[in-house]
Length: 510
Image (cartoon, rainbow, N blue to C red):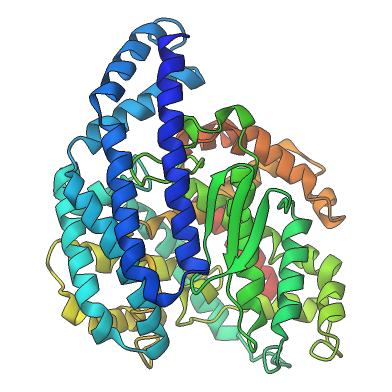
């Protein structure tokens, strides 16, 4: 065996430990009884600390040094070289992070997430507040350990989106505001209530589950290598490309909740299921910083896939022209007397709303901007946890003209802070930008793609995405992937063009 082979075998064992951690997290969010949170936290702390100790061990250093010497001159831009660079970068960062900090965050995360779920249900922010205060303090400590030049947010976003900074984000947000806010103003000026409120009905949960499974299978999610469950906050998690779990959540009076969350998470699942088999259990399917077995180039790159399949495919007029009959088959009474065009307009209606995951495509990124601003203020000490409900409501009024009537629909709506996901929110906006940029490139390279999608052929797009993006796992950065398929790095113009075209047509703005 070569030195590189020895290191690969070592990383494979580390990857296996991360898969066990992922299994415990999946169970915690889907099956575990609420009383199990404390003991699950201790289990996660034990395994997380063990995994870290293996990764930052002298054995890893020895194997990495030997592999770098062997590969350096042979293939400087190969998968092997890129895997070594990822291991080296993560190794140097992990060495700076105290093991007891990692253990504390893992243990607290399990309990905090359980308290968040209960607090959200009961509209009880005070019960969640002490857990959030502790998690914020640990994240500030983590940012200091990782290191940064301009803002602690830069250290934390590194875990999710390497190469992104708060300064670059501010430029991206400014460009989006300049395009989105005038469009939103034009839409609001002509918006009219729908003739029929499609959500004033009851939708059987068992029928919703069947429909979600049908639609996710339709776009290519492989149920031989995956499964669909329910969770308070939908998520996707994978163990290998052959075991990918997605979740959604169901509301008997709001059908879009389950449908579009399922399509969103299936988009994540398609990324994982279509990574090249030879990358399984390697550095190129390992998130070293987050300690997850995940193969996407970054969290933003993963979000590109989910947002593309949820919105640009799943909310398209063509999709519902083809598949509205499925809705009617599962819910004949609820959709009697309506048609595909009415449903398309209903699920794309633009209205400032309280809940991020239910937001339309035009206002969605405004939800992200306000969260990032709040996170940055929390991390720099400009805002305290005690002030969060008030600050949240003020930001909602500023960005969306709405004031949440309660904390359940305000500061408690997202799970991310409960498990320590500070720095994660920008990846949703990055994903939206990438989705438009990648799909534009796909259409440019496949002139018949529009016709195929109109005929319900989603395999053509899935194959193109697999060959150009999914199969590479973490080998390339998001900017490298975008440059390979579109000729340029992350660019807001395609997203703004997409929104302008779609919603000008929908609202007759031309």
